[in-house]
Length: 303
Image (tube, rainbow, N blue to C red):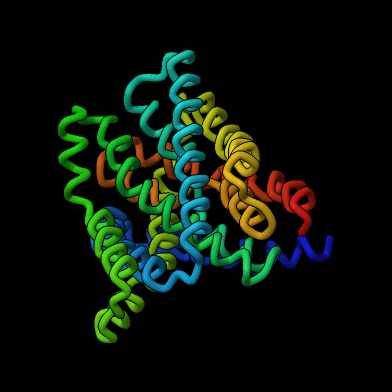
């Protein structure tokens, strides 16, 4: 019990405090979250992804397995969510919002600290790559999903081309494949800007709290919460054996798949008008409830 309290105190409480500060600012000054979310979308986040990819120390096989598991987990969750949404006859916009918050998990500022505390430095490398993969998917596949809530498929694909994270991944892969060293000024610039991504995302979360509205959205919220916190880790766990993922890699990736909805989804929902109030509510609810699902999962994985 004391160890679980320490997990909350050291890894979860700072998240709530920073988001709370953003909420307080929104109440005092009536701030619009969209300009700040665009700074994250077009500047901070691409730099964070570029830095994490170019500094990764994992072998090619380890990287391939982790990327495959993260990608398959997101896609399978998306398929499951889409089928449930169709059965429940969700309209186009609410289905896009439910897909966003079910498919994409908070594997960065929430997941990585928990993995480090529970399983140590060796698991953190896998956790970092899992985050890079899901963040890249959020800003590629996630853009298409968010855009389809209010735009055609063609416009959604056009929006995808505008996202700089796609180019950040491509540039990082060039350096990784060629063995070139990132010039020191570029590396330091990218790291400084990337380091600003996580706290800014938490502030954006707090700014969005004032828009929370549960009216008429209880069933979609129950769907996204159940899939994100229960189906996510189960799917990842089932994928580990066929992909040959064991040990620290298994511990970190399964735990990452159990994280609450990604704060990044709020940025996309705000940018593409995919019910940002509902998405923010889903992020908040899954974040508040995740200790009840992460605790037994940590015990099962051997924390």
